[in-house]
Image 1 (cartoon, helix red, strand yellow):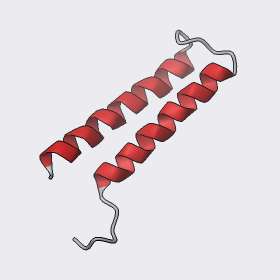
Image 2 (cartoon, one colour):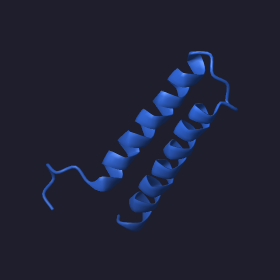
Image 3 (cartoon, one colour):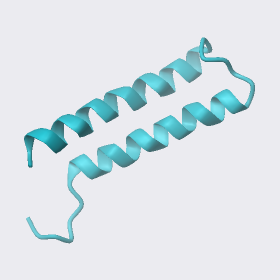
Image 4 (cartoon, helix red, strand yellow):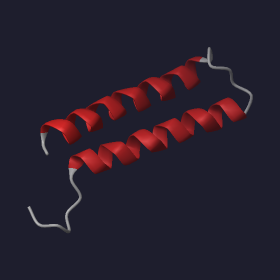
Length: 60
């Protein structure tokens, strides 16, 4: 692969950050951590973080 292409581990890491930001924005709008929407955003961020971390360590 050439150096100019983005690999999946970086894309998934960026998406994890975006989902974490979505959870923070939902929380800032008055939702609590117990709010189902906030928990969903946090869960998706956790899944994307775990996959990106696994790819980072196992494809180096």
